[in-house]
Amino acid sequence: MDKVQKGQQDFSIYHKGAVHIRSMRSIHTSNTEIIHIIISWLAISYAFAILLLWSKSGTRPSSEELFNGIFNPLVISLFTVGISFIIHEMSHKIVAQRFGSWAEFRMSPIMLLLMLVLVYQFGILFAAPGAVMIYGGNVGRRENGRISLAGPLSNLILGMAFFLLLSEQGLLYEIGRYGVIVNITLALFNMIPFGIFDGRKVWDWNKPVYILVVIATLLLLYFFVAPQLIPPVDKMPF
Image 1 (cartoon, rainbow, N blue to C red):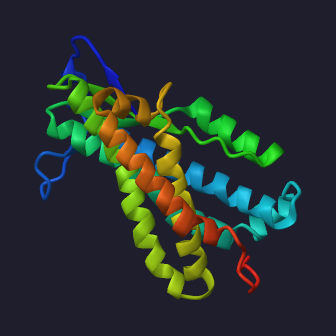
Image 2 (cartoon, rainbow, N blue to C red; image 1 turned 135 degrees about the horizontal axis):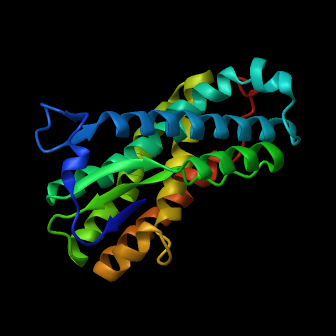
C-alpha cells in the first residue's frame, strides 16, 4: 500500500539519519524507516503465527502455546507473510523514488495493535501495518498507477519463487506452501479497484493492464493456491 501526498514538502526534515544504499544509488532510506519496517515485520509475522495456532486447534491459543509452541509457526511467518510485506512495500518505494519522489515506509502503531488484538481474540488477521508515504516528484496518474502496480506484481513473482520449495519436505515445504498462498492472495486482495487499495490507482491509470493482471492473478490462484489449501497428509511441523 502507498499514499501519495500532494503539496509542498520540506524534505530537509528527512535528511537527518538518512542512509544511502550505495549499490543502488537511486534508493534512499533512513534509520526511522528501517526501525518502522523491522517493528512491522515482527508484528505481522507474530500475528500470522498466532493465526496458524488458531488454525491448528480451532480455538484461541493458550499462554503456553504463545510462548512454547510459537517457534515453528513464527519461522514460517517471518519467511512468508513477513518477507511478502517487506517486498511489497519496498517495491512501491523503489518505483516512487525512480520518479523522483521522497518515499519511505511508516508504520501505524494503532493498526499494529488492532491487528494483534483481533488475531488473538477472534482468529481474524486484518493486516494494515502502515504504508509507503510518497511526497513530491513527477507523479501523475500514469506514475501513480505504476507505483501502485509494483506491490502486487512483486507478490506474484515472490509467490512463484516460493513454489520451488514445494518439492521439499517438513518446514521448508510449509514455508513454500504458505509463501504461495500468502503472496498470490495478497496480490489479488490489493488489486481491489476502490478505496485505499492499489487496484484503484491501477484501474484509474490503465484499465487493460488492470484486467490483465487480475486475470493472471486469478489463474495463479486457481492453479497454484487452490491445491495448496488442501492440508498435506503428513502432520504440520508445529
